[in-house]
Image (cartoon, one colour):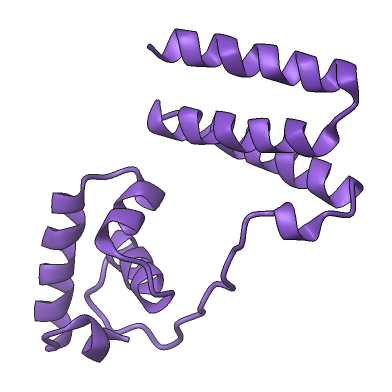
Length: 132
């Protein structure tokens, strides 16, 4: 199934290149990056995302760029949290749900839920609100 999708995306990229439609090409690049993320190819997904961002910047179309909330810098981490747990806490403070966190970290939702349970226990909190 992925091979078919990749073929269609490649064809769309060639078509929009030939026609000179940069914004549509950027949208195809974004779709392609999503496919690569789902195939668990994060490096390739980042390359495609960066290429799409560059297309939108060159075209002067910032509204087409995907929205990215500013990363929240958490200072003074409590002792005992692993790097992975700290990353999950950062994503929670950005307002992301468990599914979004799982997708961003390329893990299952169950893994995120288990990590949050450990984080809550380590920090002595009972909810996402207390965590933030």
